[in-house]
Image 1: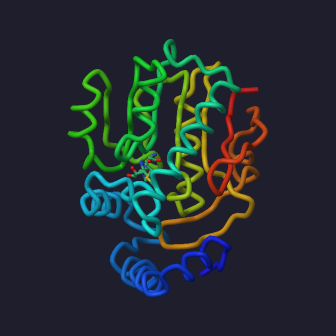
Image 2: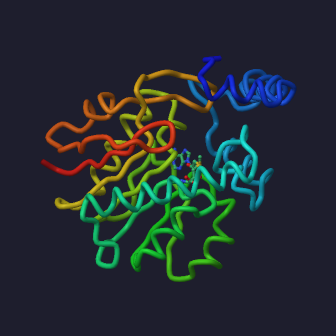
Length: 239
Ligand SMILES: C[S@@+](CC[C@H](N)C(=O)[O-])C[C@H]1O[C@@H](n2cnc3c(N)ncnc32)[C@H](O)[C@@H]1O
């Protein structure tokens, strides 16, 4: 385990919780979800969303309280919207694809920002009935982005807090290929988080850098990274 400032803070606050979480993540989780060189993402996310139901800790950070997660997500919402404005995203006229909507935090942000044409693509459909109730005009499809392409082409593709859960290099390459194929020529791909260093942390978490991504998007323009939570957010457009 990497002892970041954040981890040290958590140890100080509740050491028993940290030990229990470490056991459950490093030993139990690794045994239960291991598959090939990675993990069974469909099963992991299905179980996790079932466990947390409506709690923001499902898609968020299990090591933080509900209140801390709400604060963290609220910060992220502001940065996401500011970044989209900087990138001149036109929500109302864009055909939007969100990869990994989870329980729909960014789905609601996109709808409130004026998105009308929306498709959510997720490896698990466990939250789809709730999402369909909240957003009857939106489409949701169950698909693994590391295995197959989205069904159409989009003006805006949003992928927040999903990339770090693709832990194999080959799968990352395939996912980015599938995304680039689904971008309209003038389309924008908004991606977070990219991190300072590439590193595998847990069986279901691996950090990728902007350089790792750049290498997979030749002939594309990558924006200057902007701080987003503990990483950064970037946009990718055809050059
Ligand atoms: C940490 S949650 C983030 C959810 C949401 N984007 C948010 O920020 O609240 C990760 C999401 O990515 C989805 N996911 C993970 N791997 C995926 C894959 N290979 N293809 C499609 N979705 C995937 C999970 O099912 C989950 O909904």
